[in-house]
Amino acid sequence: MSFEVEGKLIKKYDTENKTGSFQAREFVIEVSSGNYPQFVKFQLVQDRCTLVDVYQEGEMIKVHFDLRGREWNGKYFTNLNAWRIDRPSATAQTKEAQPQSRGAGDFPTATDDPGDAGSFDDLPF
Image 1: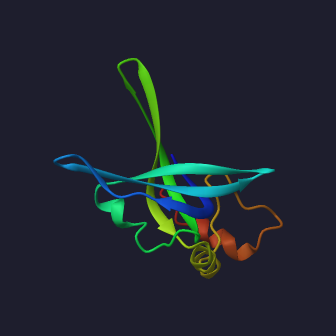
Image 2 (image 1 turned 90 degrees about the vertical axis):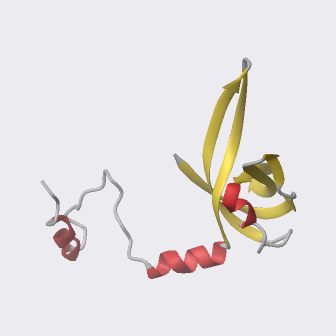
């Protein structure tokens, strides 16, 4: 399950070597939500630790992430595992250049452009 959120980069932490073969790095973004800003900490692991290097604190970024949860000794931990970081403006330009696609449950209706109907002819069943 993947998610994305936009916010201002507040803090980048140094990469930490947790074991001889595992490294992790954390960073925090400020997300505007209602009346009060939310400060959300994300984690980058392994070869993705450098993804945040090209961004400066105070810059707006878009974070793509997964929820990760685990149990250890009767305690439960949750991580927001970031796997991609973009600049919001670059993401918006990319989406404008790409054709719109339908969701899994969307089907053409009478008001849809009839040119879209041809894209459903190549279904394998």
